[in-house]
Length: 356
Length: 202
Image 1 (cartoon, rainbow over the protein chains, first blue to last red):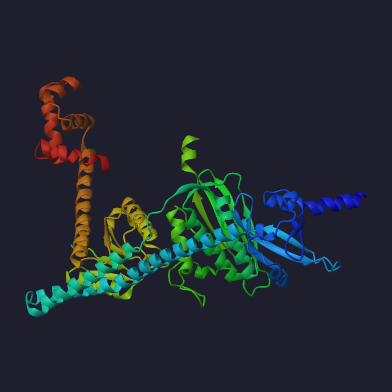
Image 2 (image 1 turned 120 degrees about the vertical axis):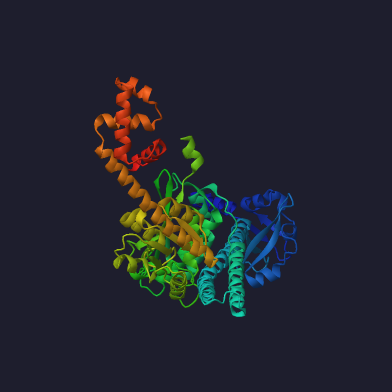
């Protein structure tokens, strides 16, 4: 055997390969493939592929070129198995086919986790935005309700001054005022009911929160056609936070950044994390978009204010609520990338500070 | 005398309704559309009550309160109206020195009482300041010996004790005592003790 042949043999043996005949029986298995099924190459020889992937259909797989089956190993564990086929065309007599088999359960699990997290974020978003809507509506409605009640009170005072405190008009004015105050009470209760439940703050690591979001951030990056740099200092990143809420805040900011850079020649977004001092850790989302004009800085945080065609203008106000619930403030300034930089801080791990 | 009430609210309807309502109560009220507007055209009233909304664009109510307290201090008591009670804001405002805090929507009578209360507070603070000034002037007229007798009297010491402490005769103490009462304008010992309570602020 030449050194090159030996190397090739080793490479093939490590690869998850099966050679099967036209009836779907295993002619040969590499070590790599046998290990995946908890067997030795010798165990597998002569057995039908059906033993490894129940219901395996060689013709269907050949027609499709690749196919995903459920694999089953020696311990009975079932896992998603992706199979690529390659017929040995140079040898039509035997009708042998090479199968490349990959256990894709890890990729499946990652995808399932991303999907779960996305569902969870969507739920949190609904609760948050509903609360924000209710708060905003309560504020807007309370103004005219309180004004109307004050006007009616004035009317009562004036009627009394004209010596008509108990006449029918005065009584009706009083009743109308009471109804307005009742409406105010309804609005207030609605707001209280839709205020998100008390938040659970736990010691967590920023780097873990962000790596957890990896799948979703990757998707946003691909779909948005942007370059997302993630630069998280993970040396000392323990914080006291409600993970899903902070993730929500970050996703909101990243989504905004994607919208800000769309249509721009450079589409860069940077997600940065730095420990500022012992009591706080700063997160920032920066972009290469047009930035926020100084005269709009106040307005962008207000609920139901939006410059976008889609959306209700709740994103930044919800994000700010989350940041404030963590004792921080959401600030916006200019990024070195050219666009906006949104920054906020999370409190450090207090149990550790107390011990230090 | 009646002090003016300055109403600061960015909502036109709310502001007008408040000015009208206070007017009907015989209270002089004037509206301002924003904290910035109010600070720019700050009326030069010696004392006044300020009624302001917390959540306003531009200068927030909390910032306005801080600026006013710096500029006008206790002579301009502040009543705050908020859309919804946020505990942290409420605590910060009360600590800053706001005299009352009203959540919207409010029972109008409740707001009127808060305003009347703060207008009374102006009078009370003024009377107290005048009393303190009178005490300060009285104390300035006392000789060093008389001041020693004053301090001992308001501590509740008897003439005998004072005489022993100052090594003078009880009869001399009686003379000093009557000079102190006269110069301070105090009718009796309880009145003199009440005056001593103003000393800290003099």
